[in-house]
Image 1 (tube, rainbow, N blue to C red):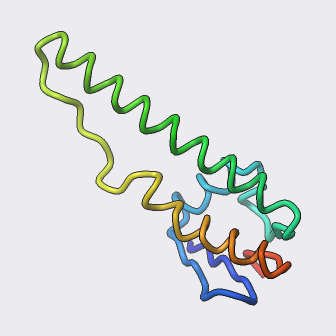
Image 2 (cartoon, rainbow, N blue to C red):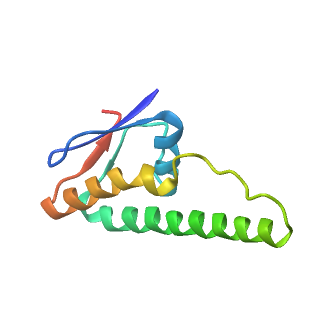
Length: 107
């Protein structure tokens, strides 16, 4: 399954199901149903995504430091970070908010 995020002011953002589901869960939306992020709700969604990115990067840094302190090899993380996956949606949300337009998916 794919998630296709649509806005009237940007191109579509298409994500594989696990990635789209994760981002929707981060912003508190039901990933199992079509949905909408109103322009007024975009700042909260952006903040939630950015906070999750900061948490993930801090957790990874801590894991690397702990492994180094114990003389172990650094852990391996997913090849594509949350930051890389979220940036296109964050950009869409910012541009849509500025234009006063909503972002929808599953419709």
